[in-house]
Image 1 (spheres, one colour):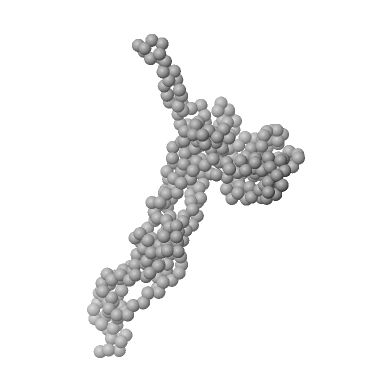
Image 2 (image 1 turned 60 degrees about the vertical axis):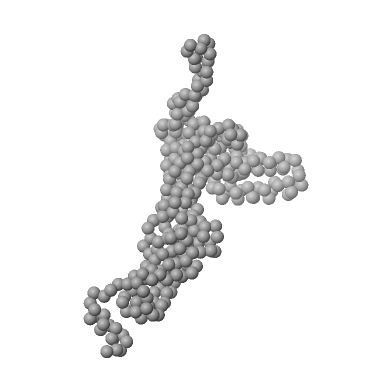
Length: 345
């Protein structure tokens, strides 16, 4: 018996290898022997030569590599190779899409087909928030977040293995169709939907999601992860909706696609002019300079230095710099500084 936490593969002969992810991805798998793995039919992951812990990127790369070898254009329509490519294509169409992969992992291939035929109800949507900075919304960035998720322990019904004993979270009730005799209506029997406790086993698990923030997104925007929400017995997994929550910035505030900030001016700067250097959200420096009298609460507009427009980051709003006058506490001291600076009397 091989511990499911071990990574590697079983060699089955004839070039067939069954890959196992091990580590954290094997936590919810059963111990196995290579004999049992090799006697079972190939699953969709094996069709692509990856394990069930493979990333979306790994799956895509595996499909491209196999396509170069088995595509009919490469094999001159060899019937054996063409059949092999059809199996590879079907596997990729299912586990290459997050939604159908989630259904396949949760409930198997039959549930994938039932879901495409709208024969299975979808589970509830899971909502969560992730905090993001104004820098991340300006530049765009991938943020990894973790949300708790209810998962159905596949194959654990009436089983008391080490894996299944850890499935101690109560599953959602199932809907059962019962035949009920109607009183006063003779032998008339009606079908009635009744909620009953599920015989399945469930668990709670932290689920890691990579949130791709596009430049120009805003706090309050949401990103959908199909089939990555809570699972319920006899339902396809619901979606996960991650809402962006913008944290307060020390320098800038956002007004639509414009960025707003303040600069403090002394009385002499307000009368004679000033210079300032502002560090932008991408690390660049913006140089401001003005000669002459600046009115209190005047706003300087720097074209094209605001937030990017989502979908077209080449277009940007403006930066609005509000000038705040700070009056000197000691007028005589200020007058002396002015005289020393300009050589006046």
